[in-house]
Image (cartoon, rainbow, N blue to C red; front, side, top):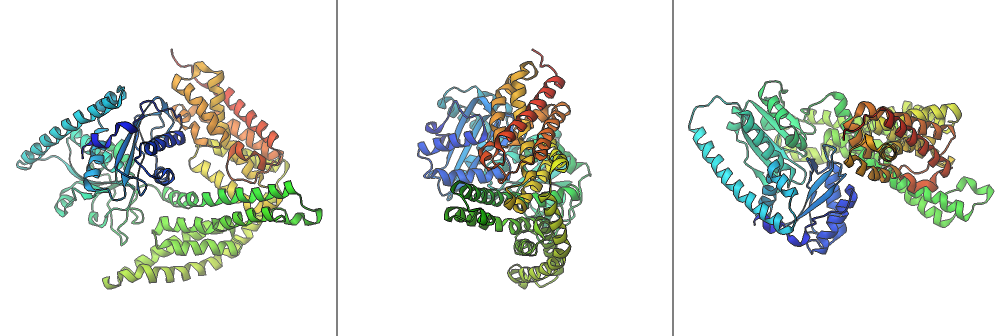
Length: 640
């Protein structure tokens, strides 16, 4: 099957109307369905969103390749879409995306389909080809361009094979490296990273062999001779790959996106002797073998965020359900002597309260469980879930579950090392018996000790939050609001947000959390400030930035702080301080006036869950205007 057979004319969009990521995905998925290529919109879209949750498929340079392989796909298809005005697709380079290739692969996709998809990925590395693609006007132009490029690519590969054969017959002193590329779905990024590495190695005068771990299996597998001969190893992967074979080699371990965008850096590290020596572990996994690059702090942050990202849906869904139960009781009415049962007095309210409470009940076990699994892979889940549950029942709360997750993970790591010397005949029983039983018992025993001091700390923190008023609340609100704007979705932002969500459970009976209200206010200010600034100070922004202003209005109202990232990345020294001032002001005002919020997310769409919704919106507007004015003053005028 050729690429032109996958690029179906009937499902091409030559003028994509969406301006944001969600809208673009919805528009393309709908086109897939209308064209009869998928049988169920929700199932296929769920696969697309699951892939986006791992890392954005907006590769940068104006290209995005969302993809999914599931039961909703009737026939392998590549939907081509072109946006004339650009889409804020949360691309890796923070720039607008203009070309989209939405890949749909059926569950039983054969090698022919997958090879064609891999060939498509490789073509998009060529900037000349991408430039021609942007100039296409009709679906026929797109198909013809790919057909010509595919033929040229085949001829080039034939020449490369001939050169490789001739080179192997000669003595050479060129450096040689090996690489492995892999992404979770194994369709697009895997092959784009392969092609990018090979192209850059050729430019640098370095010989390279790249193994791909894609949906069609392992291709171009590295041999023991290849690895022994290599000066260094590059692993550009977002999923588990076979690692033990690289024991003792200098190894660069990075995400697959770096294999596409940071190829020169990776090849340089692998060839100049500065990469760390890799030491294999029993797990044979890039995630828990201790070889990942970065500081201890970065690894702890990665493990923590794995827990937080899995926990947040439970917090958001459960929190809003509980908030709705309070609204229903307030609307229907509750007798004065029954106010202690607010949220569960009337039958309808009680129903929502039970649903929300069930989701909330999973919050701490999920947090601890997925922290532990990030550290120790799947064996860490049971010990981590148990640690979170024990923290919950023992009164240690969020902080206890956080500590419990790390304890559980490292207990399993310890057990893996302890049982490493057992006979190979017991390998199967270790995972299903030894790790769960001993991990559970050891972690449970440790949690009984941890819960004692953590309960004291947790109770003190809850009492502090419940007693916040006046100056204390204003100062804390200003601090957390400012933190939300410092790195716009990075570690500092996430720390403030997690603190806010953790405060909700302790303040439900009080009508919500002042801390959460301050955090959300601070997070809404930056994108709203961008919208206001692009309206008032038009000469300070490019046309593309002005076009993105309206998108930031929607993002700001929805509490999506990340909408302001492209502006901050382009001019951080002027933009970020402007954001911090406005966000801190909004957070401080909200805290000082004691406004409470029952929901952990939602922006203006959960305004009815605020104790003073109108005043809250006024404070956010004040913060956004202050940020916009400061930004307009300090930002340089754009040359005409």
